[in-house]
Amino acid sequence: MALSLQQQAKRRAERNRRRLKSVANGRLRLSVFRSDKNISAQIIDDAQGVTVVAASSLEGGKGSKGSDVAAAAAIGKLIAERAKEKGVSDVVFDRGGYIYHGRVKALAEAAREAGLNF
Image (cartoon, rainbow, N blue to C red; front, side, top):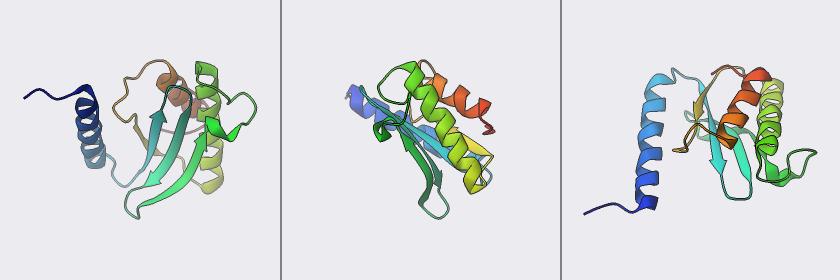
């Protein structure tokens, strides 16, 4: 029986998460969630099961409102700054089953430029 698109996406995300867990070597995970209107990112400590840092375009900061590439880049920069304040510099990038293109790519590149290593 064929899987629906939603089931395929869920299965792909789970597969990616399992793979990331094996290569993480104790690093925290930078997880991205993308909807039609917003984008959010959080740095998660899987060992303790807590979110260390989070940023979202719903916060309404300057340049981060909306669903375009510029907003995603602003969120990437913001999450990297907040991570630096908490002492986090090395993470594993979890794109959550989304392809590395557009807003996801802009967020990742902005986070790298702001000082996160992945």
